Image 1 (cartoon, rainbow, N blue to C red):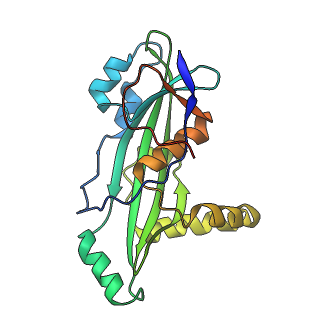
Image 2: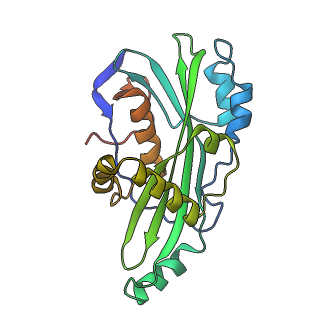
Length: 216
């Protein structure tokens, strides 16, 4: 059974501080994982050998068990402290733009922890550092961007974001007001992607992990 009192909310994680380009890169190839996962054959134990410990194991409102994994958490940046000092000393006029990307896979499990289905998701955004630090230009990755080794430069992310703005102006005003100023980092983005795919998720009673955010 599972607790309906502890839904996985979209917690806003505080910035931990990236040291270099690969400091938070799990570097698991999504295309390779897509080729080796087998529906109704692969077990959760098999997946753990490939992907490491799941970020969470939870259930949907209709009782479907979901295991979420981080494949890639990457910041394309130089030294964090130097960037922050540069922005602060210039009173925000020389902002550092740090492109960030996360890629996730969510496994749907039966009562025997066999994978019945799985879905990929991903997000890219820009962390803008000057006198303050904020995230902006949040984009949802296409399946092609998830599976291919794309360089997520600031120019690329801003370009994709501008395309989204042009496609639907009304939705974009809502998106700008709700998403752009939030400090949503890797774990937060993982939970947001899970919520977008499955709705509210609930923590299993048997799960003793401390990776779940508090309800908002």
